[in-house]
Length: 372
Ligand SMILES: O=C(O)CCC(=O)C(=O)O
Picture 1: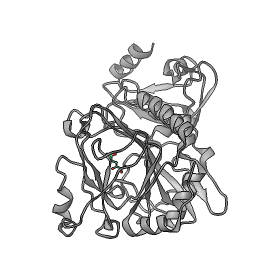
Picture 2: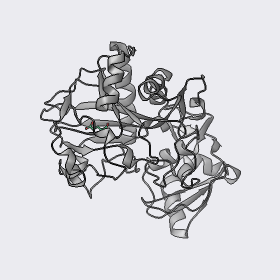
Picture 3: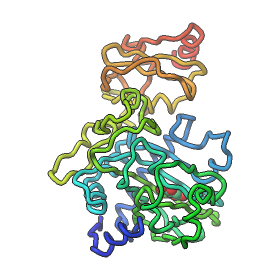
Picture 4: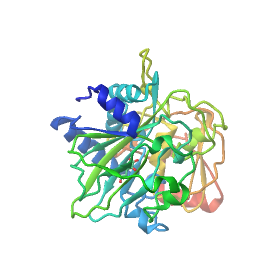
């Protein structure tokens, strides 16, 4: 990994709000990133689970902006190891000028052939904290070109405006309705070869062109934020197991969900984030609740809400999108008997007497029909 920053790169990042770091990954590293991310995306997009946009029937335009697969590190150990790499955390800290950086989340963004453009937006307003120093790493897994939808920036806009959310909609110019003063800024493209990292301040206004080629444009992104930020009341993509426990103003410092990736004094918190190992076969498995939640979400959800109760270990609610949480979790750690085909098999847990299912009769019957 070639990540020696020059003073000029740091200065451009701070002035423009973005910088392109070319060919950070060598050929072998690039192949590893492609393989791990590819596998994790395939696992994530099989069902509606709230962590991908393949089933967003209500917003057909957004579904064609890119294939979006979120929080891969929660459930894929290979991806977790890549995105919590201390060297990336140190790079983020150096650019931002912070003493410690946590990971916010990761997401793969694949512009499929002839995908729509990504409209102007900024990232931080979507997220669960306010900070002028959150940073996003966009790792190009393919060459990103003007033709296939490389990133574009409005330089300097990270220092303008506030945390009002302008969503990625179908109109490129929605941002200018909110911020007319940005409309005269000349946009700058950021094409780069595969293996490069385009780094941006998560407040800078950015977008991407459509993919005007019959090939995919794959990117893997990870966002980091300075340690010390507090919850702003917006759950966004935080696992329910965590967001449910938070009140506005609480510190966002739980390593199980937002691992400390780098600190100047050598502290790290990445071991607390323990994704389920993919393809472990039969045997013992220890799962964190977010990993369990993601696994359950990746299975067809029952039509009605069920509460899965693991006794002292805690409980989660599983059901259709928007299901209201039924309980507060008491702990994050579960030890379950078996993992089958790389995924938790709730039937095994049920038979082992560890899983108590609560719901109305019809909902319980439905669960049994799926898993008994
Ligand atoms: O890849 C894209 O099309 C957009 C990426 C983006 O907006 C981001 O990484 O913040």
